[in-house]
Image 1: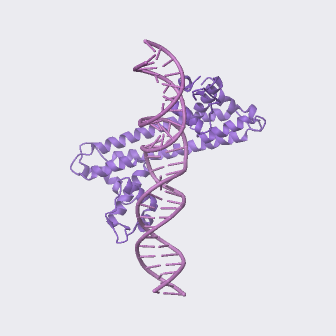
Image 2: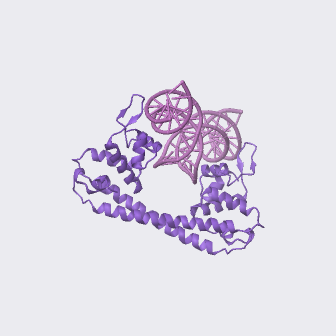
Image 3: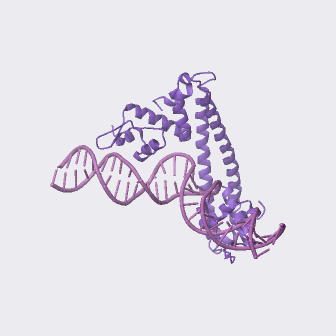
Length: 132
Length: 132
DNA sequence: TTAATATCTATAGTTACTATAGAGTCAAGA
DNA sequence: TCTTGACTCTATAGTAACTATAGATATTAA
């Protein structure tokens, strides 16, 4: 199949597929006479794997690592576990940050009501306050 | 003062200050004979304002909007309120996403224990599963 | 044959910086 | 006076994961 069909089957855009090739996570093994990329069904699987990883916010560099690991089935998979553990930690860290952020934003928002002028705006006043 | 002192006083890097100038959120009004940027104390305030906004994850484009609004003190400040409200929503949206992510990652992590080979690795198996 | 559609490569844009390279400025010490 | 070092200047490239062009070629259908 050509790139357009692969895109349709997986829900990725054509440009994204070409980008993944450049990023070394998905190669097309053949080209047609007219230099069009040709894929088989294993490309669909591979691309779904990438999509799944991306939906978990794994970076393409991490996806590449996983693919490399997968290519040597005998070695043991501690690296995979570690990667996921690190990722969970990152996610939890970011959640903490966002929680704090939301708190700050909410109290900032409470410092201004409607129908004020910019001059009176509690939000702008707060943002401008010298002590942080 | 020159850019280095402004950087020291605010905790921003010199490059960041120059970047902010390019991004139209902080201008230097004067230059020395030797073409060095010169700032006064109001630049410190302005830069702290920007830092404060950035610490709330407001984009520089939003900071620019706030600065523009601040320049017309008579108009009313609904736009400020709306911006903050939208921002709170975005933060909450992202928090929801991360919560789901964490859940998925944790159950993924539970699918593999230590001392397995890549071939047996439950994580890789799960990521490769066709049905998503 | 022609027109529409799909594909190709290469390049630029997105965000908020960071990190160079190469040149110029300035103050203090020898 | 010369020089050294610290500082500054502009311009450019890199970061992540795409998206969006431009301009050329390939293929398909009418």
